[in-house]
Image 1 (cartoon, protein in one colour):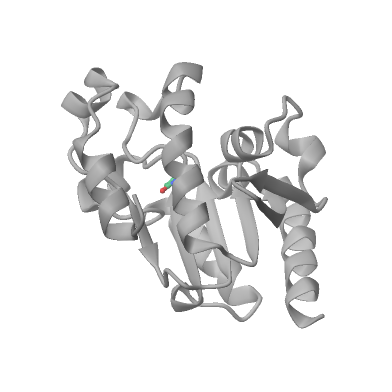
Image 2 (image 1 turned 90 degrees about the vertical axis):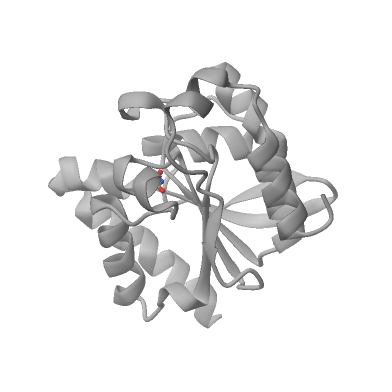
Length: 187
Ligand code: URA
């Protein structure tokens, strides 16, 4: 696929995970400014995202919006997508096979967008795009590099906002990591 539209069509035509294809309501491709410097990559759509066909529009998305606003950014300044373009039933964690099947799509998505900075939202996004087994609580707050397809993009792993909602005591960590991003943008 050599354009977002072509990639969207390829993703839509994919039937490699038949159980996900039959249980989903919508394909959730991505949203925002395709030429933005910042690209956020989450895990997979939740119930509200599946219903509306847009990433991060449920409770986690509302917190993501607040996080962006706290460092002076709006949705128009960023592009947002997920590792999986459709919702695993019951919001279960995507399987290793599902992630492996979807990885070429997100790699192409990143290669087409060529952001200056990647924000890896949560454990699945960080592990998948950094090719590591190290968990998000260790990786968060430390700049990494996304290396694939000849790209070498600075990447910041962040706690998932859904996790922060469940564990309010992690808000300070999230804020510290957003400050790292803000500093990088100001440099
Ligand atoms: N959680 C995610 O990782 N992505 C979404 O789009 C919504 C919730």
